[in-house]
Image 1 (cartoon, rainbow, N blue to C red):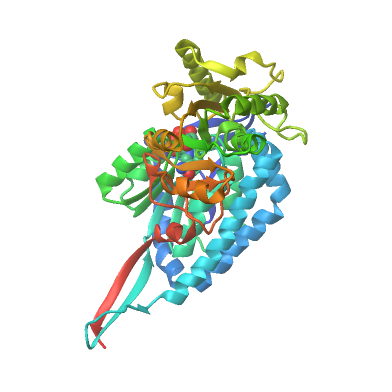
Image 2 (cartoon, rainbow, N blue to C red):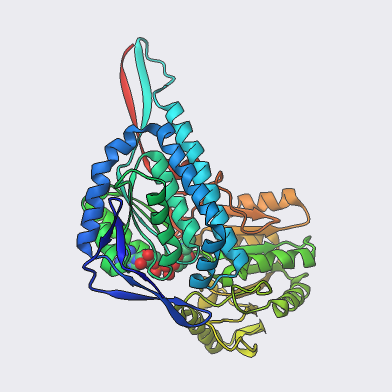
Length: 481
Ligand code: NAD
């Protein structure tokens, strides 16, 4: 069993006084695979102090000087690909193919922000076009300073890459708290920082849970900016802490994203997209398209096509090649989804496929893929994020009704439109209030395009130039020519 007893602070593995030990589990075998001695508030303080001390030298390296470190992160992740995939799969319960996506998207992100660091350097001191005679104005983009980064457990490597890579590219220094549920893949980032001789204090990692480490980090006066990915309830706490200290904050929160199947869609193709949007990663995706709005003329045929596909999903050992869907990441998450299934039973929802009627593997925190039809828009299952393999569907009479119901949500992270006419699908997509709209596709993510939510799905954007801007402060130098 692996013991993570040290925090990575100022390029030293620090033996923490850590009063608490957290068990790290393998949700398929339902056994403990590691133990983490958490840091304590003194470790947070030491990490922030180290990050503060190193920040100006890191900034002074310039984007060109920082870019090679980001490339080295990508290269080292690539070199560890096989072992990291297996580790991530074991700790997270995700099938190997899903672990590969987590890792490959993270690698692409570090590479992309190496390029962005160079582009940032090239545009420093850019002249502003204006109409004032004899005056010169130039823009510079400075790093926000010391940033506190907090991530969840569902895609540990990619959610952390989306923060760490742009923060380092911008010239910020980092105190990172990974999820206590999946600390093993993310521990590798500190090991890589050491292996590539990242200057001391630039990336610090402190393990722990939300109350023990997350809260002291968000409240620390030495933090200039917070970036958080996780649930809405915790996001609100992070925002409150940011308000107390008047710190910048970016939030990537939950979703309840719609998928619209228009009347001209081809049913079998549409069924493939619907499946990809909800059952991938056992439904534990913030951008899962978990509300299906299908034109009534196609509804029965689509439910039939989905039922056949659901029956074909192979549940099992995430490390096995013939597994399509692994267990939920934790007993807690399985219980949370089961609570929703109990609500569905109380509400009398009609299941096309019901998790409770399927034989599950003998071990593991499994929830079988589930599909409810004719779900009322007032149902809690229609309105709340379930974060599991549960799809809620209802039929609609028109495109206008589909758009109206799609937008009738507190969330606005993503949406999908399926149509036989791509131009029509794009037009409908423009009418939806969400950060990522997939047109005849599902869950495509690229580092060049922004990521983030409207409404309660978050504040700010990750990825693309916007993801870098989140860690920059713009300043103007203006005076006589
Ligand atoms: P969570 O909010 O429970 O935990 C997220 C992180 O916050 C963890 O590291 C946790 O230790 C920490 N935390 C908990 N309490 C804290 C506190 N008081 N102060 C500071 N930090 C604290 O979320 P989770 O269960 O790990 O992840 C699932 C959620 O994440 C879902 O709602 C999902 O939609 C969301 N998510 C969003 C995105 C996105 O890009 N929008 C991506 C992935 C996950």
